[in-house]
Image (cartoon, rainbow, N blue to C red; front, side, top):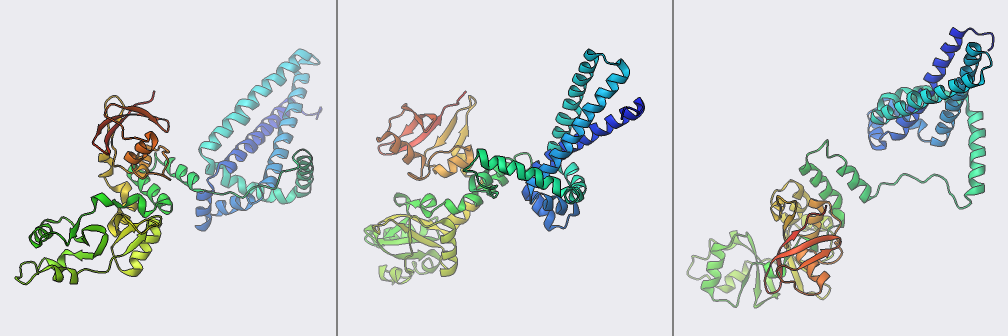
Length: 417
């Protein structure tokens, strides 16, 4: 190499720097490729994606090849730089050291930082062409790569006796929700909320979305007939619960379209009303939302009563409630439960469900206990707080704005600086 001219040496140096930049950039590009987009491109028969997916099946071999190539290019670049310095400055050690230092700076900026930054921002731009180059190189240098990886594995077993092979990539619920959240620049918030609702559907139970027992609208057969008729005429619901004295003594469900045409008849009485009711459907409180949707479909019903382990009625749920749970990200009604004030505080209706509050605020309030914010506050304080009371609820400071005798109505979450 001493016989080469300065022009040839500078040309070889530039070539080695190019190879070093290629190895560094392609490594970052291949390792930062979205595996989910890659699989989609493979399914669509994208040639570069197929090659990249193939070599990424054994990342240890790929990394071994990249490290071999990168180290070869870097070491040869250092040797060439030393020869150039010797030719230019004879044996001046200080100038040789300066040349090596200058090469280190050039390699840091142009063959490491810049290629990796660009490749991380646009991985597909370099990853797919690089896959075509690495594929034959992996076969050509397989014996050397096998030897290097064998030595690395031996050292790994020596120092990490409890280690195991590479772990299979696993995407859990939290990771998937994180991916959805990271799409904020690509998807409107309402669509992100919709996707979050679907992902969270399996963990939601009918207890989370039911109409509570005290809010169930029904017909008490012990009421006077005139009162019952008036309630039927003014009901905003299409189906009503019919019971005697207490909701636990249920007779059945009554569809208004079956009764409204009969209430004007002179012989209309409570027996006629009872004859029009359908058999009640009872749902265990911990039934998953998706499971109940399938049951509603199979049984061809649209309404049921939620009961606890003792058979006591806890609430009511309809097919519309289940569908709204899925599409809640597209609904604007839930957003009305939260108002953002000018000082950054949040004014929140305490009847909002904890799950919905978490979804809208990206908090992590516990959902395995009380289902509403009101219930969560009362459980936390073990008492019904008065207006003006301030607490820190699972890391979130709040103030009680409005309450009545037995519930919290409105709270203000304070802005955290």
